Image (cartoon, rainbow, N blue to C red; front, side, top):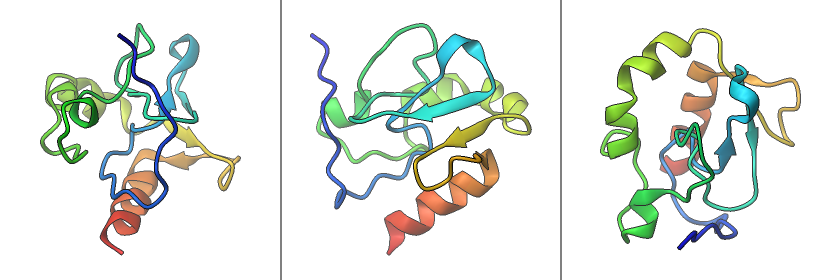
Amino acid sequence: MNQLRESNKARRVQCPFYGFAWPAATHRLLQMPGNQCGLALDRVEPCRMETAGEAVDIDLCPAAITSGQFIRMASPVIVFLTPEHPEGLSYPDWLRYVCAKADS
């Protein structure tokens, strides 16, 4: 059962891929409403950690661990597009932004 849903703005999410889709295998990830996992490259899937009732954290995420080499290789070129950043943010900048926001 697909459990995509609107994300709670107050929830502390420490994953740069949470709520993103990676359309057409481009280098541009698009922010989506809900808890879609941006690492589910060939399907639309909710965040498995959240669905399991766990805190969302890229460092503990099975999808991120499995995709670790891909993330390292793609990180220099991928861009995260959000309403606040329509020009896109690089992976390192987006990762810092997400983690700083979660820590505040």
